[in-house]
Each structure stands twice: as C-alpha cells, then as structure tokens.
Image (cartoon, rainbow, N blue to C red; front, side, top):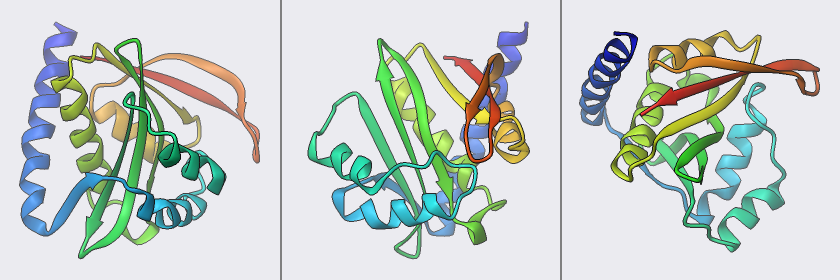
Length: 171
C-alpha cells in the first residue's frame, strides 16, 4: 500500500513539474561551459557537496556514460544543477545546488523530477542520496518525492561535522 502512495505522489509531482516549462525554465545537460557557473552555485550553497574546480573539470574531460549532470536555467542563466551517477542500475545523487534567490520557487522539484524521469526511462531500479541532518529544506524535497530514510552515516560531513541521513527511492 505504501508503494502505491509513493508512486501516486511521484506521478502527481511529475505532472505538476511538467507545467513549469511554461514559466521559461529550461533543463538541459551540463557542458564544460557550465563548470564555472556550477562551481559558483555550489560554493554559495552551504549544504551542497563541495567539489574542487578540478573535480568538475575532470567530470567533463573524462566523460562517463554512467554520470548525468543537468542544469536548470531561467532566462539563459544557470539557477541550479544536479549531478548523479549510475552504479549497477542504482543511481546515486552526488550533488544538487540551487541559487539562493531561486530557492523555494520549485526549481529543485523540477530538477529532481527531470532527473527521475530520465533514470526511470533508462530502467533504473533505485536512487540513493545523502542529506545533512540539519538540511530540512532538502529533506522535505526528497520526502515529497517519496524517498524514504534508509540509514545514517555518523559524522559524515565536515565543516561543520554532522551526520548524513541516507535516503532511498525504489523506482
């Protein structure tokens, strides 16, 4: 029964997110030209995973068909991004960041919805992610999409040190 409700919620959110295309938002694959905007977005998102610029550069210089990077734009300006990788048909959401002024406007929901649409179409079985225990906004977003808490990683994050809440979504 729980799985039925999870799927119903996911279908509703996907239908809702598809209407946001009408507002001028665009989601597209990230390219090497997006390295600097992604780096800046992430540095200003306190709760995002903090990668070095070299990690972003390596992501594009060593293309991996099992990695997906998406950009969400408004008026041709990057407002957020999502990076994930496929590990044995289970996807791990590695990083997601939304620009400060763009938060609480549905962009994270739209970006996550597009990601889930794409990996479902490829036959993914599940999606995993970690969130800082204190990151209530992100946790609410994931729970809205029917992710369920599947564990914790003690002292996983640094600066500040904090536990990670591990989430899983069965597709």
